[in-house]
Image (cartoon, rainbow over all chains, first blue to last red; front, side):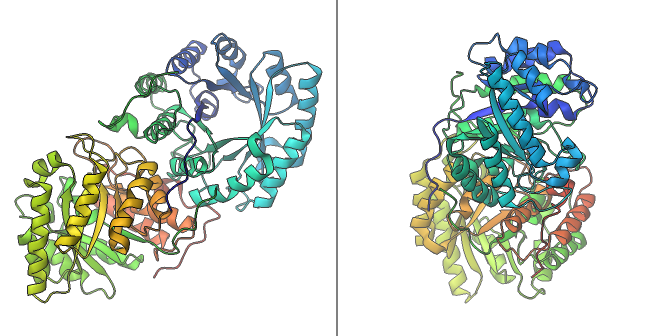
Length: 313
Length: 313
């Protein structure tokens, strides 16, 4: 049986400035982050996660998130998002007028305690407080609940599907505007994605908004394809695949933005991204990150002779 | 819509000893090739392309194909195949008792002339002569017609789908026992695979036997997944992804055997391959190829904690 029709459009949400840079030792100067946002916008990207409102002592790489966000807000039609680990971070996101804030939750109890120092249900409770704060402020900042380690965990191993689905529902009940799923440690495969995402769509409907895949075992693009077949049409990705996995030194990190954008365009799924501009930006950013591990395939192979370059947005 | 059920079993056919080694300058000693075949067999692989019956002056790396084939034939249940460029090569494959010989044909007229010095229809005619020779010899060597550049070509660009399908049919009419399709230059994407393979199955039915993908732009595993959804259950792959593409220096080559075997096992598609043994073999072969570019992800990241190791065949 041939594949069902894919969505006509999809969004590649850039997370390199957050998920990418946070796992890199090097601190990129604010001016370069702003240049990255500017060039990504010029290449047609319209959703960019510009940083994280965490205490600067935890992630000095992202200490300038407010400044990068302020610049991103000057670009018409750009939805700039930030990660917020808790209510304090959310209050900063509201104050600085982010279009979207993403609260991460780990479906793995062990991972949640180790990384967030909270149980998953404590994070759900925090979602309730964040929603109340957003509404009290009369803010229009959207709230996304991102459920990570959705396909398993390096600490506890298996993560029950029922627990992932329960937490998606709990986040929505607690006030999330939308939810997403992340394969934080690169354990997913296309069959598992197909199974879990189908159920997630049953729980959350069109409030299920995004798939976040790591390419740790080379399956990020296959997982994106499996998601697309279900109608999911937003994917996190990181330019040059930066990000890495702390549990697998040297392994690939996030799906590479340019490879994901290439695959989508090659399949006639419109992203609004001009591949030539994105590849030029990649070269620029890789230069800035000199010595850090980068990933991806299309930058080296080039675009196929048969590839019809879509126009930028 | 969730994915249709995948095949319960699939074959990862090792082509590293042919497609891989032929694009590498280094000549691997015969004893090491034999050791590779032995360890691949021990890891559970049961289909291995051991070389090519081309004139040694063209491919000195494969000059010992008859010796490697003779060893492979001593392993019970191992189907050892060889590539044959023409009738002369086929006569050697018959004489040496290969289980299978594969005649490559390029659907791109330009690529066919540049690489094989024949038009596609001249190759079809050669298939007829090979079939006659096989039958006259009373040989049981199977004949596969492999149609390459099936998704486009670095020389001529577009390759018409109708031409690919016409050539599949022509090869069958000329006497091929079975046919396969190859994305020789890494131009395929999962949608294109889904479309073309569905039509190929309509032309050839269960005589359509294999997908051969290159990972030039990172899509080999996604393409394998798209094929599996149609019920195709045999894939060429090369240990450590060796192979490369002469038109894209440094780019990835064939799908990596170990990553493909991992993806299949993770999706509960049985391959009979013991991943731990295969990864140990990979380390061995990479040592032999010191300095040559190698690829793949799983060797670095390791197997997920949740991964249930299947038993070897």
